[in-house]
Length: 114
Image 1 (tube, rainbow, N blue to C red):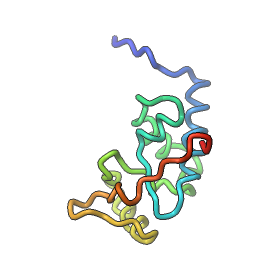
Image 2: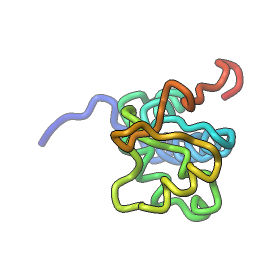
Image 3: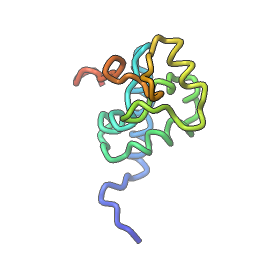
């Protein structure tokens, strides 16, 4: 069995989940951020995949602006075709390769803002 030195306790996982949802609530219209940024701001930089799972499985997350979270390259979530439409409705632009233009739309909160 593999050893994970940064494995979360159940209490840390609950706190992480709350932090993730709080951060996602703050992403402004017309901006995006990444799973990795959210994980880092929540204090667990190696847990970007857990951000995605939190957004997918947390009750009430569907009412949050989850569509504003993309991967580091600006790719939208696989299997969620509506995500691009929601972002375009907010003025987010995409490059010819289909990725969000991160140079224009990446949101990074102020250090004290999260």
